[in-house]
Image (cartoon, rainbow, N blue to C red; front, side, top):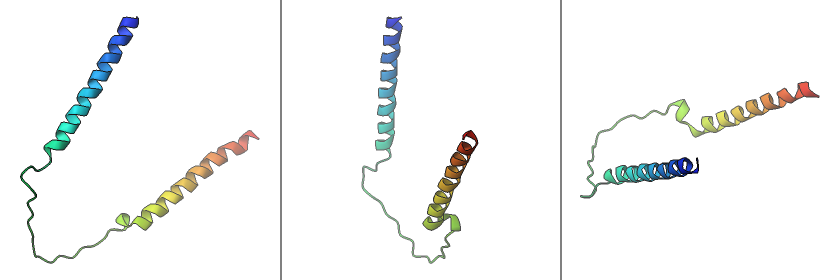
Length: 81
């Protein structure tokens, strides 16, 4: 039993090491070795910002979500007293 546990532990460690090495390989493979190539376009365009991209809406939605979760958690305790 102890042999199987040790074997599973070593296999898990090996898989984690292999996964980490593969991820770092893929991350470095995306790096440009020849230098940075930039291309500039001089066209004018109109940009619009969607309402869901505004940080104030995200912060307000997060606060509202926390308040709703707190009310649900607190509401569950009222029946126990």
